[in-house]
Length: 159
Image (cartoon, rainbow, N blue to C red):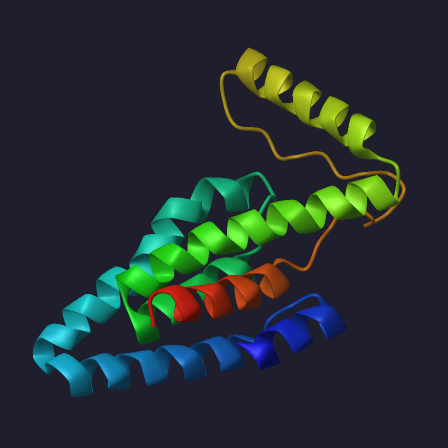
């Protein structure tokens, strides 16, 4: 988790090698704990984040690396830890975003962009890609940090 967050901070990406290593560990952990049944638990726990967050990925609200990171957590720790991690991560991410918007004094403008996006998507009758901000990436947060904190919270609450 820490390696993924550090990689995200450094390059704004999470290596597929790191993800594949985590998935391999998850499959091994589940197989050792539950035998052949563990493979099914692994597949379900890895698939849930992909299914749940696909729309957020299409909207550019969540990156593919973040979704894969949730899958690794589900694969290694199972559904209960994954569920608490997701809830805590989105809360932490919302706090990070709010702080960043307040710091950059862009809360009102970002709410207007979001309102326009919702309006255009409803008018088009389909989900549009979220517009990029012209002045750069100041609205982007490294969500892997929120996932790391959410995972820590989940381990404290459930683990």
